[in-house]
Amino acid sequence: MPADLSAGHVAVEMLDAAFEGTLEVSARRSERRSGRLIWFDLEQLTLAGLTRRKGRITHVDHDPLATPIEGVVLADASRACRLQVPTTPVLDCRAAVITMEFTRLRRASSRVPTDLRAAMTAEGLTLEGMGEREVRHLVSVVREARDPAVRRARITDVIEFLRSRAQVGGVTT
Amino acid sequence: MTADDENYGGAIPHLLSGVPVRSVDDIVDLAGDYGVPALDAVMIAANFSGARTELQHPRARFQIWPDGPITWPELFQLILPLDNPESPFLLTDVELSFDDQVVARVQNVENDDVVIAYPRKGGRAMTVNTYARSQCTGCIFCPNVIEDAADDKLLTVDALVEFLDLARQDYGWNDLSHLDRLTVSSGCFLNEPAAIDHLILLRKAAASLGFGGVLHILSSVIRTKDGLTQLAAEAGPFYLSLTLECFERRNLLLKDSKASLTFDVAKQLMADCRDVDVDVDFTYVVGLDGLDTAVTGTRTLLDNCTVFPKLQVYQAHNAFMRHSSHPDARHLSYFFAYRQAIDDIAGEISLRPESWENYRPLWYTRFGDEPLRCLRI
Image (cartoon, rainbow over all chains, first blue to last red; front, side):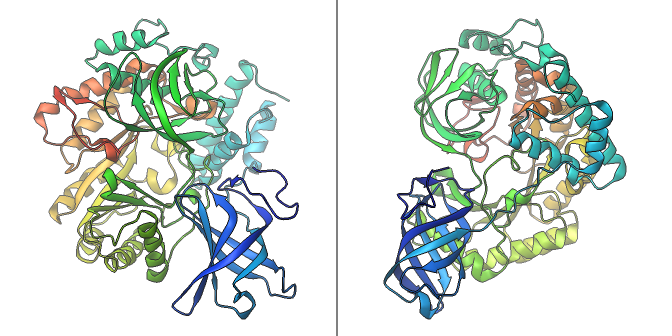
């Protein structure tokens, strides 16, 4: 993730597709569609790949009282970004420096469910030392199981994995 | 699992003799025992073991040009997990090597994040993610939960038209009339009506931009003949890839909505598809089942397919995923033996793999005794 995103106008590197947070970019209106939508080119912003992100304009430089407004940021394969917002007088301008907030992604939780944690505790096992992505994966597999028997089987499988990991140098409590 | 299983020690274990594969020559020698061509063998080995890298991606997509001990005058698309520090393969942004021996030049290395559309088949097919693929979790083999994602559900014709039009502009197409396939690779719809509703909306949206080709979905929730009939009528021509993925341990390895698609149900559904003129195949992850089960199940279902199934090498991103592979499949020769068993019946079937349909395949340059000539990307 690029550094100094919040420091003044951004000399933006390519943002990770999963970026969350706030940044300032120059926006220039490029097109009006069907009288309902406005497109802005986001001149300093690039995202990886063809991407569609929800974003929110929280501040407009020449109109600090502008109401925050939700939009959609579309990045094309050349990585250039456009912001699409519903028509609003506040944003009906040729160019502006705007503050964009990228809303939080609905990412799978990495919080360990109570039943899995209890089983780990009983065995003296922890997830310490595992990467966040691996934890998220492991937890999602248990969390998704609703049938009690399937859930027990998955927890047993995770415990077996954690035991083998502990034997080859992993972590126990 | 033992410590030896867990630690490849910089080489790929050899199932039969226990002798590690330490060089490209070793891979080629081993593959020769199973009738697997050299290039195919190296590609399978890369898919199986992933790669180490200095790049900051958990998983990368890129094109490779075989240009080492084995050369080939075509580009192939490859997607590799990069989280295996024990892999003998090393990926940089310009080459893929095995134990310091360059095996291919690479280009366009990108983080394999969840994109919302991309072309295949030289631009004559497009894969779209219109229903938040990243939010689908619960299958052990799937890297979805690992990948970076920013996708969303598109729930109206207007939203779908807008999205498809963006893709059209992005790829410089006048309209979508040149596409002969639009594939939906999305988050799980959880139930059949939701999937059918979405596909009908997508057909309307795509048709408004000139699309008249086959609408294709990878799904496990379309289960009834009535549903297939409706799709054929309102979203057809239609093609279903049943996301079967494995034959054993389904409750353990697959999310609830997918695990309930049993082998017998899948077989009946494939017959139903043929009855209502819907093309059908299945997706299968090679490496989750014992070898006998894998071969028998694949051969049985192949008889019911109208398109060659998507048989993919299991890619483990982390130790937990490696733990979930079948013990037999922690060895490279498992994949060669599986391939050989399917090669053995190639002469009995008319279906052939297409490289552009599957970027983790077991066939690259030959299928059975025939050269495999097709679009690659």
